[in-house]
Image (cartoon, rainbow, N blue to C red; front, side, top):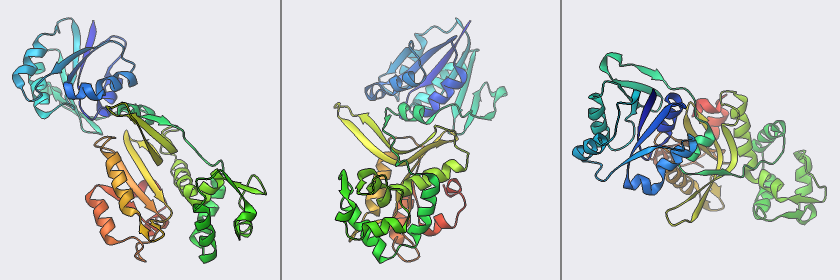
Length: 362
């Protein structure tokens, strides 16, 4: 006999995917309980796509706060043909969760579960109640796709991690002369290539840092981007990878996540470093400095992170890492307090230099 897996659809699809991948198999039928709002957003289709579900039954609730409607529509389905019924009540509204729980408690084959983000609680039958750790059975790409995004274009400089680590130490001791060169390069960040002789002092700078430039005459766009900040993204990326606690393929740098809105317009967001760790999504915005001329850009970075966090799950974690100093007041207390109030962690030069592990900071 087949099993039935019941899923309540909400804005948080990742826990549903975890449960489906853990409990589902080729002998499983799927029943989704959704709303018109969730159907319009396409959440159920994202889940089905990630879990390779080609056939399902969907109950669409018109009033997500009506216990009577929930019971009535569930009563129209047939459950006798199933050996086991696994019900995940993590999603939906609270009323939907209550109504589905009450309905399936009457069925002797039903086992009801709730996922907290890390643990899986067996709610019913009560004599089997337990809490268990979920398997890390979802990948970074699956997590991203479950929220309707596509991961595109991971870009790296091709410069070795060893050189980047050495450049990090050199950067910490940059003086006025080096910062002047960095400033000139930033003005040219979006151009394809420049003659090295075109920028006064650039050749001497490249020699002083032993930069592995490809062309002795020209500096290209990728090299300029590396020197003006991309190196710091790659340093954080390599540092996390060296800790060897993130599965291969579950960490990326320099990626664009794209998504179509309801009007069919493609929206793209660039991320410095993203990874999945213990089934939770982490994003790090890397800034060598939060000052851009006279303009303080930390507020822009904080609010960008907040906006993105809303689209990637309740349990997503967003951080800003900067080599600006809070001790020298480059990073203001007001900014740190604002970020903290919005659930965004900010790590400054002192935090990064004082820690042997990036993930321990997070």
